[in-house]
Length: 396
Image (tube, rainbow, N blue to C red; front, side, top):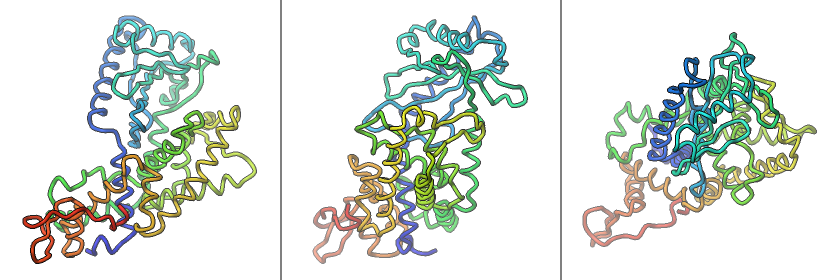
């Protein structure tokens, strides 16, 4: 098996995957969200009023369902999207009735009543823990496809169509269309050949690090760059559903995260050069236009174009070796937390332990902050004078 550091593209791929992994929700917040979701589900299930005896399903949708979560910048709230799916035809009820019954049931709980915020299409529960839960009620449109829903729209005083469950399945099918992801293949081979047995358990990435598909990782990274770009102008921020849908539609089965993002950005640039604005429709429900706001608020489309153009310019730098591109990783995905430095240290620490190359082993010791130099000038971890971390390995 060839040396990891002889393959720049593989090293870059590993860095991008590590950055995406680091950007995911922390375990504490995920556990609290799961507990809260189960509690709300139980509360709605036990209703003695309108929902009693109804055939209902309650499930998460959005980034949680398709495994593309990214923790918000600056400890902002994470948006947990929940569907209250009534398996009853919408024609049996009015949109106002469904919405009001959801609000009524939530208000019957003292805690939920204090947390409740009524939105246009959903009921929001604001939790003290950096997340809020948006509960979207809906009824089926037809028994032929019970996943297609009508949900209430307060502004329109009418129903509006959506299909979050089939959308999630569509995205995951697109993500899983890749044949042989490069990073997954490398790690599976390394494990099967016993190479990873040389590493400490704490240095090994968990399985989702290398099994999550390039499209899923690409969406995570695109959303993080979006968050950074619009940090000081959130009112113009491009929605996640638009970015996720465009990414999946334009995906061509690339086997790397880098190749996936490169392909997506280039294809969006080509579309932007056309005369008409890009339309982003729900691929499994074409009557739902995710980009409809771009018609009523064209400035949002202008900022989307600026964001993509800026992303494209900086992305080109990642085609260069790490000595020239290191700063761009921070610029794109997290300068405030020195994200590149952190992931490169972890990468070098792992591969220095499984490599037989003396120079790579030495780099891992120095980057890990455990380097000592003995009286003969040999670098080790047992005796001698403490070494300062060098700053000439990929500009960290």
